[in-house]
Length: 477
Image 1 (cartoon, rainbow, N blue to C red):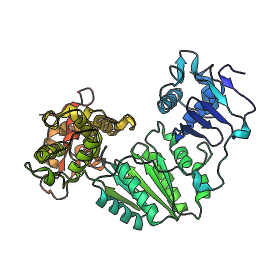
Image 2: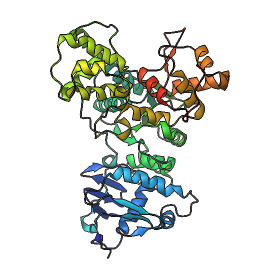
Image 3: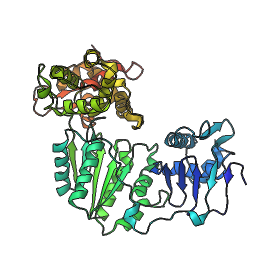
Image 4: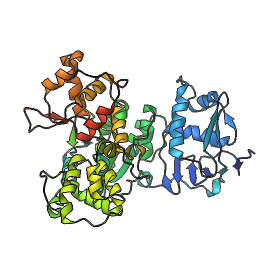
């Protein structure tokens, strides 16, 4: 018996592995930490099992490739990519310096003490398939200023089977979608609901496994789409697929197959750009409404959702009472933050430790972009810069270059202005890049402004302006 593994015995499909506050169900391919689900891709799960079975020993890269990718030709870096995702999912070691360590020419080692629980105490998969659907994440705060948007989503779900909520990073797509699904459940309790979060997926190979897992199937099952079709046949299901933008190429064919084969399935997706498939209804989520005047008292400012959210989150963070004289400062801050909920929440937290007048005067690019958020938030939502970086990292070089050059515009601009600052790229390439940036919610397009319909949100413009020459070439002045 390995010194790091206790109660080892014959490998059984319902065995649980335990380490620290984690429990791993081998047969169900499920991980929990202190009772809360931990979502990782199928390959990362397989890597974890291999390390748990040989805890305390170094397992070579070739051994891991042979066990996890048996019969497949893959790049050697695949182990490193999935191991990185696994380390992020597990976090820091609780009873050791780190859960997984590596050594050159030796491989990877699991450092924690592992227990394999006997099969007679292992939990089994419930017979009712609805009980295995991944549940919606619980919300710890109220949703502010999105009542009309929730109604729009519900209306779209009433007449379309594929609805995509689109918007820039930090705009609140996930929160709005979750609340809409909660309302949908209240209206039609006979419809089962499943939640698939694709944000932490490191490889396109894990997309189908993650969706299968959300629907109560094994992430490692062969032909996952066929398994989903078989399981959901004849059932009414609403599937919320969150954070689709980085895996669209693999995701779209699977969703189309599911929608075609399951006439009672509906899909609500969130993405920074449309999926661009037949039958899709695109609902663009706008920033929260911001005050349209400079001078106003608190009562007037509180009529605007952006200010409502700022005050509510600041109060929760321990800020003192706000007075009528604070109305203009709050209105100015809401405008500087573009009405983006993530930016508002990040800055609101500082009002618990910083006077409103001081913060309003110092609300510069650095404060807007890099203010630290909740430790419990997804890493890409802990600062607005991280949320923008997630989206910008997905851009091809031509679009990244144009975005950087468009940051010279502090207000609205038209296509001719975009062509001038990007003249060396050519008219057709610039036009295509601009349309793509608008589709990806990085450039705002206002149909009511025919003369100059495009603009960058100030937070996006500030971040784009920080991109260095090595990120993309500087456009003409």
